[in-house]
Image 1 (cartoon, protein in one colour):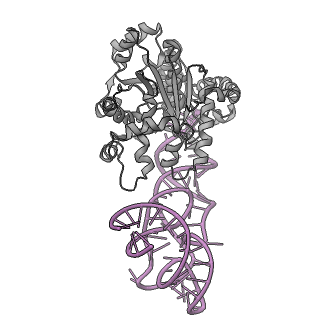
Image 2 (cartoon, rainbow, N blue to C red):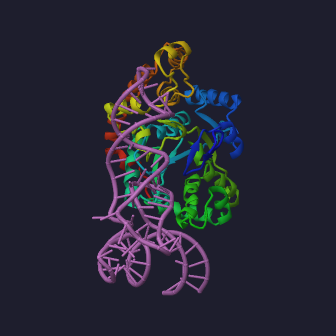
Image 3 (spheres, protein in one colour):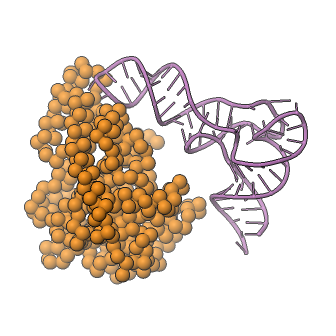
Length: 370
RNA sequence: GGGUUCGUAGCCUAGCCUGGUAGGGCGAUGGUCUCCAAAACCAUCGAUCGUCGGUUCAAAUCCGAUCGGGCCCA
């Protein structure tokens, strides 16, 4: 694969992603300055993930906001495929969903697709994906969601609730649609072929419009959902997409939960975090200290800097100083890494405490089948 | 149920026809070099060749059975 090629699908992300090209390819809308301003004025806050383009693309987010202004409520939906333990990249859309929920005071559904990971990962058993679903749920809850307005859907547990909706969806999607959208072939197991209708189901769990914050790689599922929404008498789901979080080891793919090395898990200890960052984080520094002082580093490709930008340093002034110091050569890669290590460990300390408490709270969050 | 095809280290794979206990790539690990990482260079680990049995002095290689995956047909 040459350097200007990239692949983005719900199951595989590879290459150096050109997000403008991806917008064109997927047919989404870039988040315009006007939309940014609208969100800002409605929430009275300028969220750093929007300002910095971590969320960069959408489908009909403006419609959701306009309806909301007219007094029409919406709800939020996001999720996670439990193929492994939660890593810090997963938290991006969840934290953003929390923010949206707080600002608009709306319900949120969080879907754990344990069945889908069982179908798509040959080496995972259903027991394992169910176990990871539970583990992932703890991380989600730890972010502080309100149990009154937030429900966790586990596919294998909530199938009774999801199935009637999924059936409506499934009848309107044919094999050619899914083949074209996901690249399925005759070897694809039939669980995968049906699966997208289950991922669609939460879009219609309430009779209101839905807004879905999610990683852009999951967009294809909802492209199909949007295509069939009107056929089943529902509104199209609206989406807001975040970029893929780079792996520690460098650009050229998203952080993968199955690759131990390039991943910081939410359960990692401070020592492990330190070791992983120092040992694996791809840097934009120069080959040696003299050249670095003279030529400066490149924060745009430096993974440590990117993590600060994407998640761990919401303060623009501090981030700007780091950017400039690194670029000028004043800040060394090792020093930049030290800043990130401290930020991550500070975050994980409280996260891990909340995660422990979540074990007592999980029951309140699980959706009950009706 | 029938047919067909595949099963070699974490992954991809050579070898199988023409039997003599396995070679490569990626990855991983360690080192050199770096403020780190990457790159580069050096080194190392790692496979009883799905399983059981047969033929043979000798089988990943031939034969049989069996298990598992894929596809086609019913």
